[in-house]
Amino acid sequence: MESKEGDVAEIRVNPSNYSKRVVLKMILGRSDGGLGLVGERFVIGGWVKSYKDPKKEVPPGVRGSRDSSCVEILQSRIPLFRTVMRILIGSNGSIRENLGVVPPKPEKPSVAYLDVNDGSCVANLQVMVDSSVAPLIQLTPTGTSILVEGILTKASVVGKHAIELKVNEILHVGTVDHAMYPLSKRQLPLNILRGYSQLRPRTTTVASVTRIRSALTHSTHIFFQNNGCLYVHLPVITTTDCKGFSEKFRVTTLLDKANKDPNATDGTNAIGLEVIKDAIKEKSKRVEELKRTDSNKEALFVALQDLKKTNELALQLEEQEKLNRGTSFVARKVDFSTDFFSRQTYLTVSGQLHLECYACALGSVYSFGPTFRAEKSQSTKCLAEMWMVELEMAFTDLEDAINSAEDYLKFMCRWTIENCSDDMKFLSKRIDKTIVNRLQSVASSSFEKISYTDVVEVLKKVKLQCIFIGNIKFINILTTYHGFSSYPIELNNQVTKKAFEAKVEWGVPLTDEHESYLADEIYKKPVIIYNYPKEVKPFYMRLNNDGKTVAALDIVVPKGGALIRGGQREERIDTLLSRIKEFGLPREQYEWYLDLRRHGTVKHSGFSLYFDHMVLFATGLSDIRDVIPFPRSYDNVNN
Image 1: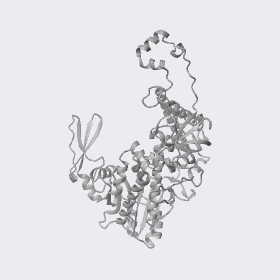
Image 2 (image 1 turned 180 degrees about the vertical axis):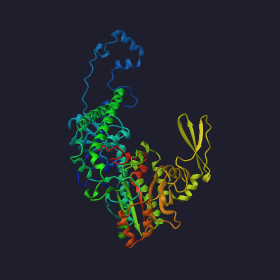
Image 3 (image 1 turned 60 degrees about the vertical axis):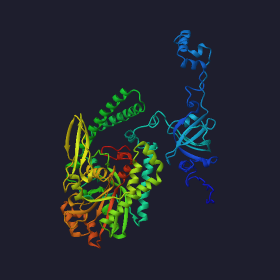
Image 4 (image 1 turned 180 degrees about the horizontal axis):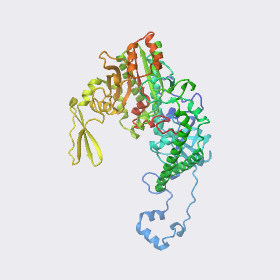
């Protein structure tokens, strides 16, 4: 509601449209921290993060509990008194019993203070529950879900909370087996959390990453919709390889048919394999139980070794089973005309070629979806399934693609800073204190533009000095380019000079090491690299007039690497046919794509943003498996 100048506008917090509850962000996200809502009645729901018993709270500056007797205080603070008492009553005696002091029976807590979070924000709401409302033992375990109704009041216990919800009624309780709940004991590292994809969103770090990922998704749609682009859904199953040289996942039902072949072996190891898999489940449970406690580390080590050996045995039997069952399928030439699609099909590596069809009819279009690569990599920057944002614009050239890519990247950075401030503050403390500054730098700086040819010349001037201290290698970078220099460290250890791990010369693809050094060390800001040799870019990039380079672009950011790749597409059919031949690609797979050049061809350009890499950059995390909800990587699918 509107207010007169100088008055404070009353903002009423209403339940969500499809639930009776009020999300905590509407209460805790206010500028006053929710104090202006004191006295209001709310229904809130969430999961218990922690529990506090007020009777166990010790006031600042006071040692021991408030119930300590004079005898106990003298005993703890006066050594002579303690010695005399031991002589008088004996070493095994109880001071309380010998002095006639009856120890009080432990009181059951009458009030519980719960820190509750519903995933809408970083902050937790303190919820006070009296034992007369519900049995407190059901509510206090970490992970318990509750839906409660109560009155918002000022916090009754001085601490980090300014407000609390005094519960009048319990509407729902989802209990937790405390002994089995993996998040109940301590803060687990991210690599351990990956084994619990179904529960890790309840941790503050993963929840913050998820909210930032959602904000980046929202900003993507806002940017493109505001710039007149249409959103197009693209197929996941395709007959073509967009890149022309990538590893692909084949889609087929022929393996099922081969397994039903009466001539195939019946799998004599099947029974033994099932028994071993059951044993693995039991041993995995044992390992999880041991991981949840810091004690008995020797038992954990033995259990891990035992589980490893059992897994290795299971893998051997599985490989033998696959070999037996697949003999009839592998040995013969595959007839894909009998397959589900009557031809070879794959999971898409990129939707760009399909997106061009719509760009050449509707103008500017974009897509946002998963892509797949069957590369056997354990890299922290690569997964089998990753998300990609792709844009295609008709009647545009390389310069237009560069400008739109730069504006899009800046828009996402500004949006994240403005709409995820609490999550960014939390991740700055927990993960990387520089993430906000990095986003602000990208959003406000002018990007450096440099051709591939000039990049090679710059990098050739770089010398890396490797200093070996024992078996540990440290790299000190030496360069004379643009006045940058650093002096070698005087050490009585092995010192060698070398170039980059990959050789720098014209015609060779730039590596992550090359790109990162360019943005991190030389220019210290985002760098746009353009006009690459035609051999290192896909066949559809437009050939430049020099006949050696293509109109391709990459955008590299400091501490983030290459986030965007794209360029102008080849609209000339003769040139495109020559490029397909150069790459040795089967022309028949691209006839539908060539039709775009036969019928009403038009200059067009676009780019692809590696969305998961953008989330890595925005959150400061280092492993891509921590920024995607359910990561699928080589030899690893949890659920």
